[in-house]
Amino acid sequence: MKYLLIILLSAFLFSCSASDDDNNSENNCNLISFEPAQLYYEFFPRQDLGFRVNGFDENFEGIQIEYAEDDRITRIIGGPTAVPAGVNLTDFIMTDLIQYEVNYSGNNIDITTIFDFDQTETITNYYTITNSRILERSVIRPRGIANERIDFTYEYIGNKVFEYENEELFRTFYFENNNLIKVEELIYFNPDNIFEDSDMLYGKYEIIFSEFDNLPNLLKGEFFIDGAFFKSFSDNNYHRVEDKYYLYNQQTEEFEWNNNTNWRSYNFGVNDDDSSGLFTTDCLIEN
Image (tube, rainbow, N blue to C red):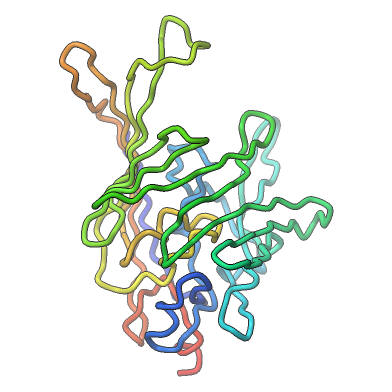
């Protein structure tokens, strides 16, 4: 089954980095907002390709970014929130009622999600980022009916990054031309006993990013921005994302694709300053 969503986007407001000063120093411009459609929120089901949004709040004008005097990001405004959609159903909308406060201590970044409609509920995630490289993160993820804190660490070897979840290999990230092109997650499963932890290789998932432009990715290194984790690895901007699933054949010892692909493509255009239409900087606004 294939899903195609072509998103023709007009320019939104966007803003540059706190952890990666390179994006700022090239032209002394800050991103002040960005178009959210290319974000990949990992808590959405795989078939949604990281972006299951049914609408936008009437006041939502893209993901807004605020800075301190030293040009480091201090607040991010805008994110997805669940809304009821009938009996036992839930939709998601993008709203500016979701905000994120960013605090720094050396290479460590703490980001707290604040729900404007419920000031008592907050979630704090922790990141260690050095020279635009994510080294560690500790994040809250939905698991069943509850939330669970998961600790990730990262190992960089050649054109691969290995992601460890609670000290066990979880995913492998593949790179080409300084862009993240594939995320591979191996599945271990015993069909004879689904409740047993198994070392039997059963299949794998792949997230594939392709059709990169030659324009700078102004989210490079901003791993702490909700939904921007995958995108933050790349120098440029992908225009297509796919999700594939493979079963492992124990006899041939090969992966066999099940011919099921979900995919989404984008067309952001180009701004007057030759930057991606995904972004708007304060320099673009001034001009």
